[in-house]
Length: 553
Image 1 (cartoon, rainbow, N blue to C red):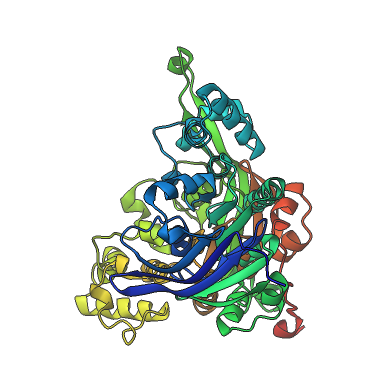
Image 2 (cartoon, one colour):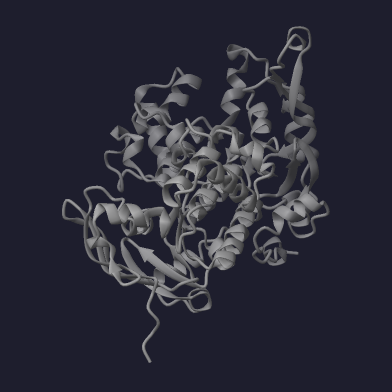
């Protein structure tokens, strides 16, 4: 008996630029109503495969066949491809802020699709756009219809993108990393929404992602890509429980873990003194407010504020990690900026008795002791400075008496410490950030912070932009450095797995208020507050390690 005709049947697809192939002979079938996940690290060829289906790769050399309901898309005319795009095959892109037109409201953009593809009158198209916004879970859809992309949150923008993709009722939806920039609970909401819409409309979905937790929640079948080759595919259970290829097994084993994490020795070593356990950083009554413009005459006579953080009390000891968890807008980043002395605040932030003065000369000594590693290493590293200049800059500022030879030796020492060795990168100091991968750039950012030997590192979503395998490498490196140097970490993240791997204590923020805090094990396994439970349950936990053997209990 012959297998049913596939909705999309990719046969021997090869994608190349200038004779250099990035996808090698890929074979992939997707049936009507099926959910398929295409997984792999950055650069594996996932996104270009999806873009080739819609013939959106300019100047690329495409060979093989991309059969859409039996018709080869690689042989279709531009006019026919224009009809198929959006009408039969739609796509959700990774970053909605760059995919949406900033000069049009989201409603106008959805309505435009309906007018072009479904030939609806404008009034009917507008009404249908409002309905689609409502179906994708956007609150107050009539008002959001008139909002511009920058006026929506990340989750709302992604929902608007989904509404636009579904406007012409496609048979296949290509979802390229649709939840990468979203909070954990929001990722699950978006995934559930996509699953509900898929069941309702009967469309097929190709989910492109490196997040294996998402795959387990969504896919019927999984295909794994490595360096342009499809190395394994099968049902969800076959790939997750009986993976055959070493690369697939490596991806599955890349979930963050707590190996090497510095433990609470004070709880297991009665001989430790009070000075060993005193707080390195202590905040009391920390309050952060931002001025808000008020229209009309009231704005002339009365000041209005938005409170981002209200009455926060917390402390961090040397060699410990305080994880701060919460969704976007909860106050996490404002808290981090206050700890770094970058914004005005009310209350007390004391670093071993020393507080920020708001004057560069007086704060210079404290700046050396408190350093930061940002979320996006590409955005935080100057593109005009070499790696050598980037890492040496802090050393030259805080130790101006150091000679050029001493600076160079210290720079190489810290680069070697973060895994960028002279043997592997002989010309490392003279290269620019764009010449490195995301994980390597994050190691450079870490070296820049470590070179001045800080006591506290503020880690603002340090791995959210990285693939799972690179994420694990960076987290393992941070654990190793903490154990070696005894540094404290303030870890800002929305990734519960990262907290499970890194945090000793966890503090949960909701709308600027601490709703729960305590030891990581208690908060992440026995959460009391409903908001904490919603975050922790967004994705299944990995087993909490048995520490009795390692602690000698």
